[in-house]
Every structure is written in C-alpha cells, then in structure tokens.
Amino acid sequence: MAKKKKREAEAQNPEKQDQDNEAENHELPNGDSHKKKKKKKIDKKERVEAKYIPTLTIAVAGSIIDNTQSYELATRLAGQIARAATIFRIDEVVVFDNKSNSENDSIYRTNPDNSAENESGADFLIRVLKYLETPQYLRKALFPMHNSLRFVGELRMFLACILQGLLPPLDAPHHLRKHEWAPFREGVTLKERAPNSSGTLVDVGLNKNVVIDQVLDPGTRVTVAMGTDRNLDAVRQVVSSSKPRDEAGMYWGYKVRYASNISSVLRECPYKGGYDHLIGTSEHGVVIKSSDLVIPSFRHLLIAFGGLAGLEECIEEDINLKVKDAREVFDSYLNTCPDQGSRTIRTEEAIFISLQFFREPISRALERTQRFTKIN
Image 1 (cartoon, rainbow, N blue to C red):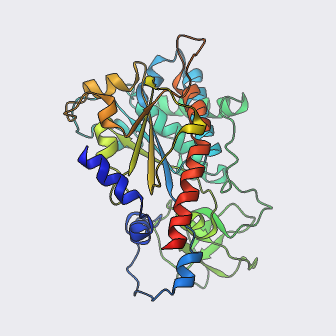
Image 2: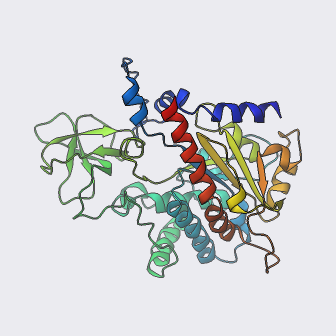
C-alpha cells in the first residue's frame, strides 16, 4: 500500500522528472544512448509552454495465441491487437508469459531469428506485432528470409494473410507513402557507402536514398529528421525514435517488450521510476461508469489484460508476487464490460472495449496534468 501511495504522490508532479526520464530511457535507434547535454536555463515562459506527453502501455498475455485453431486465426488475432494499439495511440505493448520463474527464457528474446517449431504464443505475437509496426518499405530488409524451411513458410503465410485482409495495414503516421513528405521518416541503413561522403546511405522509402551524418552498420533501423528541405542530396541527421512524439506530438508507433511473467512486466519497466498507475481488467473487477472513473495524473500508465483464465491465474502462478489478490497488485481493478451477454469476452475484444472505456478518464487526467504543469 505504501508503494501504491508513493506512485500516486509522484504522479501529481510529472514535470519534475520527465525531461530527465525521456532522455535517459529512450535510446537512439542505432543503440546509442543520448549524450548528456549542458543544462540550459529555462525561463518560466518556456516551462509553461512546454507540452507534457505521458505514455500509455498495455500488457497482454501471450497465451491467448495458444487457443487459436490455425495459423491464420492466430495471425488475425495479432493483427487486431496491433490495430487497437495504433488506433488508441499506445506507446508500448508488453507480451508476457505465464511462467512461474523470472528467467528470461523466451525463444524470441534469446534469438529473434529463431523460428523453432516450439515457438511459444508470446514469441509469435511479438513477431507479428513488430512486423506490423514496421513501415511497409522496411519489412523486406528487417524481416529477411530465414534458412529454416518453416520460417520460409511463415513469411509466405504473412504475405497471404495480408492479401486476404487478415493483417490489415496499421496506416500509422510513420507508415508514409513515397509521395508523402514529413518532418521525420523511418529508414534502414544500407551496405553501400554514400558517394563523396563519410556518412551512411539510408532507405527512407522515397525515390532516392538519403545520406546521414553517421557511419552505422547496415540493416539498422533509424529515425531520420527530414525537416522541410526536400533536397534529397542534403545530409540528414539520425534522431531518437521518441523525437517525433516528444517534439511534434506525432504518434510514432509502439515498442514491443517481452516479459516472462506479470511481475516482470512491472519490474522491467523501461521508464525511470516505473509505471505510476496500474490498471488491471477482469470480469471480476469493480464495476464503475467511465464518466465516474478518476485516473490520477500520471507519467506512465499501464493497462493489463489476462490470458485465457484472466489476470487472476497469471498472478497466482507467479511465485515472485507475494500477494495473490489482484486488487493489491493493481491500483485499479475494473470490469470494463459489465452485464455481458456472452459468457466469455476474448482478449482482443476486451482490448478494444477497455481502451475506449478508458479514453475519457485518461483525457481528463491529461488535462489535470497540463493545468498542474502550467501552475507550477
């Protein structure tokens, strides 16, 4: 309880740590952390005009894939989750296993290119989520054919699923067409060296590759600042993947993270200070109207969805959690779809229902946060 109160107290003053948090926790796409810059004195006017942007995370049990009867249905389910995450501007998707230990033994985490026959539901879900979040023009370079015959079949199935409409495009802001110009574009570094330059050629999905002012290994996904100068011969800069969101307020896709169990979801949070408000969803949760729900001001909000037997089973099987009551694990434990006609609500359905349910309470929390920031 003391930990919960501490999170709520910290959430009331989000401005205090946010600038440091984002700089410390977000890395450049090439893996290099932000270099510390000299502190600049910010006057009161600049502080008031600064826009605070919190993060939204959803945690989903990978076991939901195990209940599907075919590869096509599993792919369709993963596509629905990716669509929900994009529509509701989710920043991070955590896929967790129902494992009793905390060791990180996921096939995907230990070997991202491994497509062994024993691939878990969590591994499969992560693979599809990452694939769909990637702009179309980068997928061939970032998801190459694998030596495994099984993976060759999977890649063909991916293409078949897209053609059949089982994997609808996310159409996110960073999934740009060739004729579209934007301040930022996602790209992949190439093997070819830039002519008359010590930089690196990058494919950003335009008619011509651009040059960046760094030498990076080929096959690295990067975010490139394009600016307003449409001269493709101009040298560009690689920026943090969070910059379009932080500076321009653009939704720039979601990150995907694996967790071996529900406690790892919380413990391995990439944000400094962790998630400051935790919401669990269940048919056994508290029933409250969306209009009456009050979510405190937050920096990083987590909404968790259970597997086939709900969050209760996930908590019960996690030996790292000393408490077994979901109401003690989460700050709020809610039933977002009371009086349901079906005896079961699938997780992919629950995600859409819940994210719409939380939309207004989250908006009200953000308004309070912005008012608090301006006052202080």
